[in-house]
Length: 303
Image 1: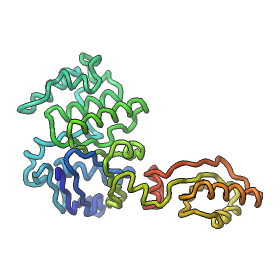
Image 2 (image 1 turned 90 degrees about the vertical axis):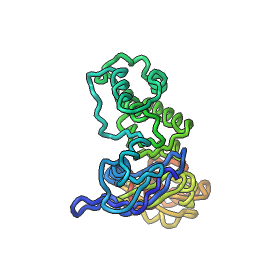
Image 3 (image 1 turned 120 degrees about the vertical axis):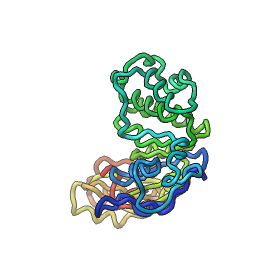
Image 4 (image 1 turned 90 degrees about the horizontal axis):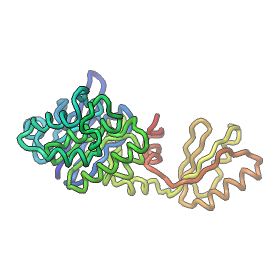
């Protein structure tokens, strides 16, 4: 195993930020830490990379203990954090050369600049870069010494869809080169596309761990039907529908989970028509990781 975490704990006074979290990550795996803001994802990463000391538990990266062998750990990891600060007045070339000088060996700078799609910005100052370009530069700086393990903490937060997709491509390239990647995110689609396995965290706890496909399959529901009922007295008709495994509701917006989409959808339409109930904004879709989180916690990841 490239990463072995056992019973990791972090407290801040009476607040338990991370509560006995355990998991393992294999070599070459993209491992997702998924959860809302405040779930404990960043704190977990900060303990693994040596920025915060665990209050309890153990962790080993590439065989090195994060408490006892901090310097050896730093040699085998690359880190891009949400709060990564860059020297704004340096050019892309200059800052990469500076970071490269911190290590005994490093990868060739020019191919790395090209890989991060920053060739045209080579001589531009960091302060002039867009958000997506700065994130790509931060990843370049994290891997300039060719680490075995790369930590990416919400790398696409705040980026537009095109910039996000560009970073997805870069992460997949890193995986193709055999890097082990720990990716923290609160974007369900991102986790589903990129991750081999996902650990879902909530309120400091690890509440689920599996492949994206198996997590969705655990719902026992292939499809979801969404619609809005504006009249609360009509809500009871939901209880009579066939083929429904679970129902969630928020602000009169209902989601029905079913493994028999056609029959449930037909039942919804027929019963609503018979009872003269008006259904608004009816949609059907496949079940997602967002639905898994709602099933496990009773609330949306975005809350």
